[in-house]
Length: 267
Image (tube, rainbow, N blue to C red; front, side, top):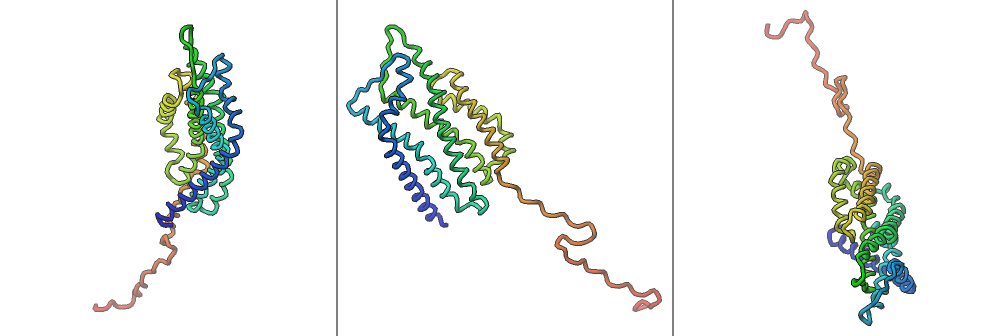
């Protein structure tokens, strides 16, 4: 395929991925109100209430929640379009990994979002709202609270795709297991830097809640790269030691020597 044909194929896959997202949005839109109530539970458990300060705020928050929920619901279809885009560059024996790619990618994406909602953000909210005291009452808007949760839910879902991205890069020859293991210390440092940027609180506990899974996922990616990475081409066979050339051709024999009793020419 030429460069323009690749761009056309990419456009087709993007459009079909957006169609899958639209289908997910239509399915999750009737449940948007219940999802908003679920997201508001941590605030209500701490005795606070959510408010909205604009007439259209509650409506757009429900649309945003439905969109993100539709993204998670449509993730298998979106991953299928990603696979179809890279499939023409794969060998025939590699195309059988389509179903594991979609299944593992979906599980990791949904698992990362669930880890954010049920583990990271509840501790973060408890820490941040602990600063409330008499004379300092939190008034949290619905939009700010939902944006806070959705941002980290999508971020954690994307970060949890690391064990899937590493084997793909290893299969393409971009990285290998030895290089990843050799740079492990830099990966650990990068995990804590990413956790410091992405986590909503500055305390080390919540940062470790994100950096720990990142390090574990990196190790899983190394194992996956070792199993599914590109194999090196076999070394050429060494030359035979019996005088045969490497290409297997016959060695030309020297001319026969003259008999001892035959006079030499010119003597």
